[in-house]
Length: 71
Image (cartoon, rainbow, N blue to C red; front, top):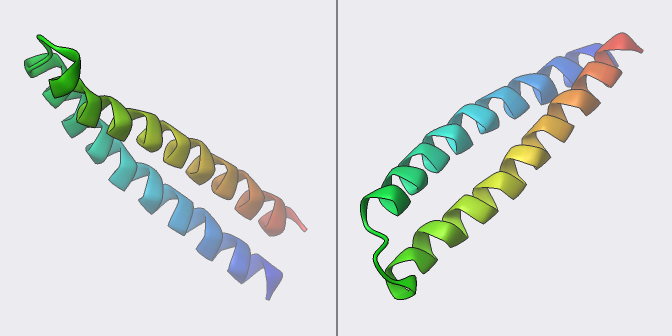
């Protein structure tokens, strides 16, 4: 039972990583495309920071799932 839950957590972490990767790609493209002033860059930079936090959370989730699978 723990192994199955571990694989579900790993899969959810991988899907989250892919989704956040697309989000970060869009935010970085937006940031590179229009950044003459700080007012226009703040939204893109905020998404990049929050996306980075989400990416770290997804990687921790994958690691926790792999620990559960190895039990």
